[in-house]
Length: 111
Length: 117
Image (tube, rainbow over all chains, first blue to last red; front, side, top):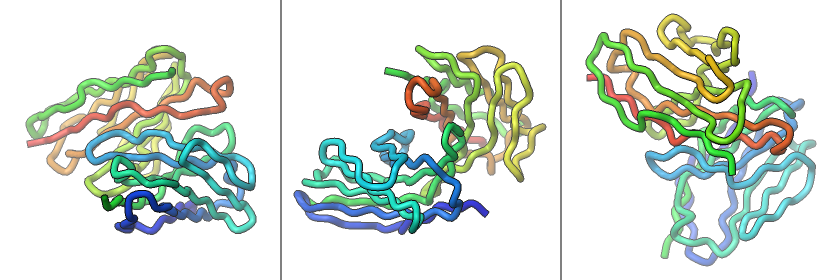
């Protein structure tokens, strides 16, 4: 059974610190990995996508992928209160737009 | 950038009636769109894959006769919840992608809150 697992949290991080979000997936053939941010009552918003092993950085966000360990993470540097949201990890087969979502991690940045 | 729009954003309907939700890709064509449902504090669950010009593909456990999907053009897919019941109350979200040219980036609509009373 294809699964994507995340710690549901809540995860509380002081403002300015690094927030670390983790995700594991069970389907070894997965090739595309995404992190979405979802504010309460709103639709998910794409934060990062990653397809190759290693790190990918975009501003304050860094996605890390380790296919051997079937693990993908998201680091948020210099956390801001506006980063408080639920972060969803999503996985897909390459070129397949059907996403399998994790349950999401609720992140709270404490001012 | 690519935008996916849903309408209505909120709808209240009486139990037993049907309600239609539209999903439009505003500046790209999408041969495939996806419909998700999300209950409060839960993750998104894929309901079905909407295919332009052909029948939708439903996920296991999703009733195709209850959740009618029509993908009549390359920019529009509709989800009709038929004979709605209170347990159908949920947040319905569609997604679409411009395809390989965008790195297969997937865009979500704003979502539609359905309340069945």
